[in-house]
Image (tube, rainbow, N blue to C red; front, side, top):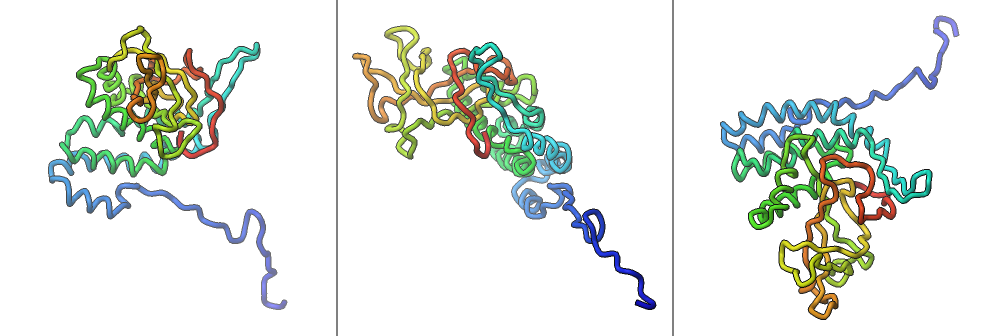
Length: 286
């Protein structure tokens, strides 16, 4: 038409284009969290932690977020056999997932609670940092929850059990080369909320006649779900036997066992001797 320019319309790469969201500092932009910490922490404690939270607020919006996206785009793969047919049960893990483990160690996402620099409120500081971390973690916060629970158990029992004292030092380390994650291996095929009725794993003393706490046992069973299967250790349930060699039924027969899966921090990829990985479950977390 006279006096009007021709309409160009829109195309795949021009016209209206949606502006993607841009993450800012996840601590500075969280007014509720900042006000809460100002209310519950002393001025000295707030000064000590706030600069770290502000720094981490940028980290989770940039580098950590990239690690998480990489872990999400490269899910783990289970290689059951090598080219010669040997059973290897090797877990192929994303570099993004492995990087998250280093982040968790350096940032003290478990350690903060046990260093207790802010006393009882150290849990508040830890929870604040975990809240900033979770959305960018690629769900690495899931094995961290398992690890924290195991660390507390080891802390309570370490004086009587040297193996648990050693595990505690690894679980609460800030050194990525020493940091361990832990699974909780409870669920068996029966499932359900009645854990006692659903536990068929049998614990056999490694030395006949020695079944006291702290003794070594061989566990025989099948866990339907094992969290943090790439971790260095796990806490798992098993059922002890009576004097006649029969599994003790009900709650009385259940015991919690510490299982060291790997000695060195960092997954070797292959399942250790004595374990078979049947399959990977398509689920959130580990």
